[in-house]
Image (tube, rainbow, N blue to C red; front, top):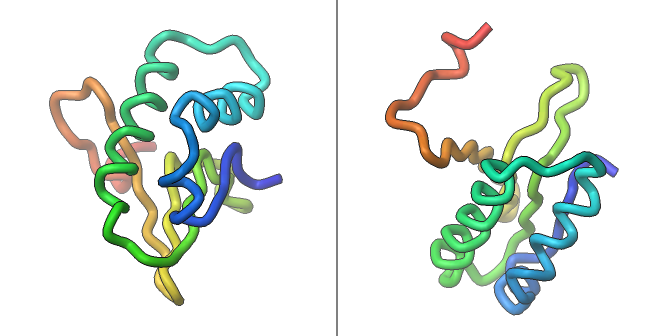
Length: 101
């Protein structure tokens, strides 16, 4: 599978946060560092708040992008629009992906 957790936004909003976190943890398959745990918990909380008014769409956490060999934090698909969301929980500044090598 290309993602750790995926669902419709409607079901995501109804699903228990601990269950979502559990799905992410199981799919991760490695030891979880505290920073990763805190990041997912915060991402779930923020996205539940921010997607409550979105009637339809899909959400995917830890989505793997083929050919790039990278994984993005969250992808939200609304109709034909794809939103790629990267969280930097605990960071003091944003570094553009263009400046990261």
